[in-house]
Figure 1 (spheres, helix red, strand yellow):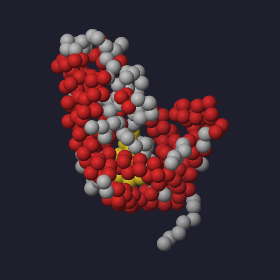
Figure 2: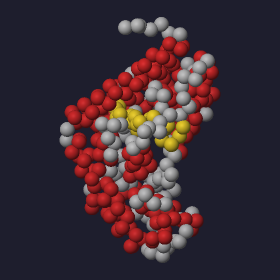
Figure 3: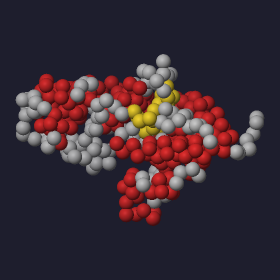
Length: 336
């Protein structure tokens, strides 16, 4: 039945938005149908930058609630938070002794996040791509859903797996393949079609949050930046119209269509007609997620138990892989 083992992770940032849902979570839900799926809230990655402990815990619970409300079935998929499965951190250290400095020096995300204050960045921020490799290879995952910003890290994971296999003379780790969505949903800001939708934007009107009420969603779409031209007939005509392209892309992703199919339906129409239809589609998708999220967050003990059970299921897979890995490397281990 399964086409492979999928692993993917999401940071516990809280307040997940439409970009997270259409860019990743919706795809995760679909992958459950014919893959063995393991989904992780990567709280160890989160602490590569300073975190307030209570907010980290709250954000982890919020993300868990959002994933379940969006359709992640915890009876079939494994859902857990990373820090509860110690094999991730232990395997990451082993990979620190396989990965090369030159490989990590090429990682563009570290350069972007550290910025001019590079000397003050934590070792964790620099080395977290090896932890990401451990996240994936602790389960010998064969497939990893990735966006543009993570392709480089998956390549590093493949490099580490290749180097490990070469160093110890056997094909121990698989080389995981990227899972690219057929229609990659890259959701941009509602106020600037050239910038990704982000929680860090000062204005809440740049994004649709998954906990937004229906009236607020409609208001945000109504105020979304557009241009005075009607929707064109072809995708090529959207090339220099980033805000129009963004709204068309959102509707396409929500309705499982291509941008071209959306334009066949709406070409020649103005945004005064298109925006209310888009808002209605958004509300239809987000309202049930929001309702279920709120229900789940009313009982955080239940959420914590779900993550705990998920971590036990994850460890059942990861522990024998780690033991076998350590055996290949020559470590003396307990036989009990």
